[in-house]
Image (cartoon, rainbow, N blue to C red; front, side, top):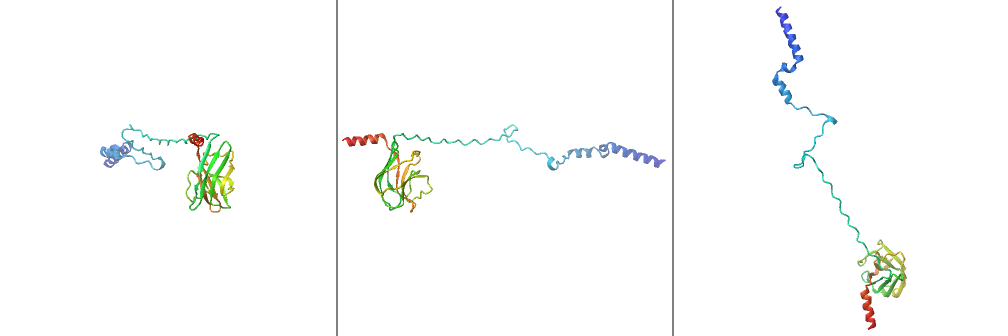
Length: 208
């Protein structure tokens, strides 16, 4: 009889444990289990932690977009008047070269004249218009933007050349006597527009 009672009591205890595990292990163990944080979710299901917001932003992160670089507009070039006259004085293009005379360009006549030219003679000399404002002594202009007006007619004296009708002398501001064999300039002259005041002064001097 006593053994039967013990068996019945043990069976009731097992049933109560299954129904309420917290009561069977006690309240201290239950509170300890609640204090343990849940394990991190493994793999791709793990939540991405948001970066902390900087102070003073109210919890929102604002990324400043870079401001675009201001574009500098190209400097407009005023077109040359149809009756403009350009001129320049020759100087040596390389050490030891002889260069004298001047260049006169008349757009109305579409003509370039060399006046009192005197350069070191050669059989391979050409007359070039070059897109160079300044020329260094002995500089190679083979790969520089240029327009050839043909072979130099003679190394001394006055001579005239026809200009291509589409030539823009705002770009080609220099005249060069070029040596193909030596790949250097015998003479160079920078063109500049003749002002009205200068031409008026010259006329006054001639009248006197």
